Image 1: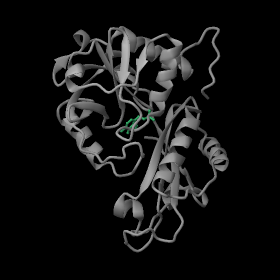
Image 2: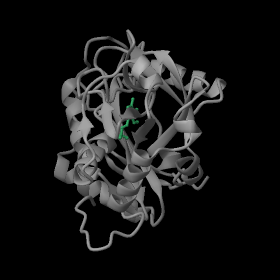
Image 3: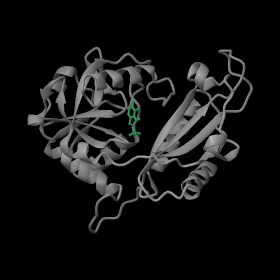
Length: 292
Ligand SMILES: Cc1ncc(COP(=O)(O)O)c(C=O)c1O
């Protein structure tokens, strides 16, 4: 995999090889930090504002002071792509922790550690075409899943369990109510209506999720932010998930049982197309998008 050497830190641009952190680092000790993953297509950010807004919301929720004002961060993130000469499909990973200090649960009086780097991220075109399988698992996460916290152990374990079962994702439920997946939001389609969990503290408020809500409205597809049960999931006409790296991904099998005859459904396909038009991945005849 190609290495993009220039990493944006709180102090400026640093060569990846020269980047070192003290072993007494709050992210390592406590997972005391937040992060973001932003999609870049052909060298251009997609849904940048949504991600930056969410990062500041997460920071505020954990009382973390980020080293940059928003405007400054936008400029630095543009420079990050320029200085690494990015023209292709990549992702930018951003992380901020409560700094480096002697281990103590109480907040230290030090500045946050921050970095943002670039990594290649080709689109998952084959899977977008065929769809993927998923398993269902109890949601064992904390009560503040709207914070994009570095504490991802339950998500890591769920995703690993999916992998060990030959599946792409784990769909999580709290007492039979579906929340989201280990690293994506989840939707079911019934009678051409789309349902997904409302934006409460039980799910991450996905940037693609909020975009899909708008795109569904534009396409006259009824979109309901209503929680659904495991049983309703099992009886869905179609199921799909969304995230910045998986886009609009059809789920064609759940716990070994086929969904929609193991083929991506009509509504899912329509929303996939709408996403691709919005992100300028396919042509948009006579329509102007405002997403970049
Ligand atoms: C738990 C969880 N839910 C949902 C999402 C989707 O968020 P987004 O659409 O902003 O990428 C992610 C993305 O990483 C996630 O980790």
